[in-house]
Length: 270
Image 1 (cartoon, rainbow, N blue to C red):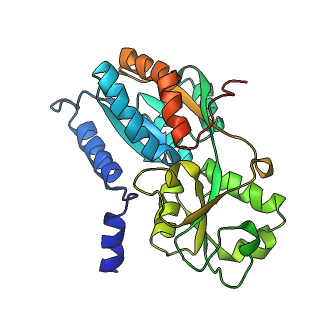
Image 2: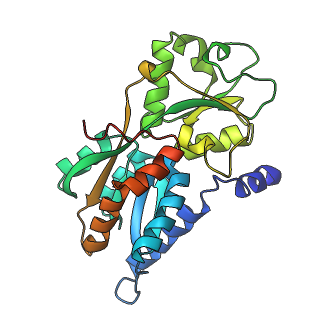
Image 3: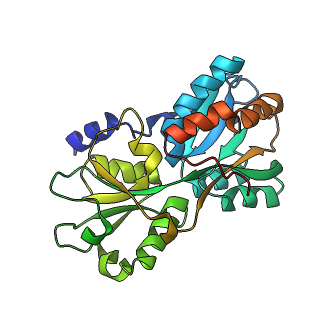
């Protein structure tokens, strides 16, 4: 057990920074009268965009001088946190449903926009497994990692893919659900799962290039993964800074970065 924990701590998917942020948020909420919250732009981002956001945040700070806190998680859980008053200034979702829900609840400045289209992949760290849909029903594969479709749009896409490929009944007993794409990646990276459905943006990150084998899945077998962006309407929001980041993500410079992580940006807002 200790070795497993240490393996996760050393992996690119260790969620420690989010855990510590949550603790800090609770403490700051309890002692708000006496505590000054760090003056940074706080951005909630779906787990699939974790690595791209590291690069984007660095470029944004270089361009504007504005520092950021990036909090990653499943789109559904981040949405619930925003609706409950979490101190996020912007939200980058893995779909449009959750940002639209926030907008309908009066918690957003303006309607959400699409900032990128994501791609679903199969990824394995096991040398003897070929990451191909036809192999999922084989006896060689016993555990298939997938994001929880109740809270993660990439999980919804994976289930839709399995249904459209007539594979769901053959593999449903093998499915192992992660809270988000990040946890799915932990399962795959640690080989706790033989294979899993992840995001192309993950395997194109510099930390993970050439780690294992992956295959991009047919985009016609699942609904387009339209990644949504909104500015959160909350008390004490850093609106001016949030506006700058909103415009930055839709800029050509940011689109170039997103495309390097496998996102499509040429058909935005159609």
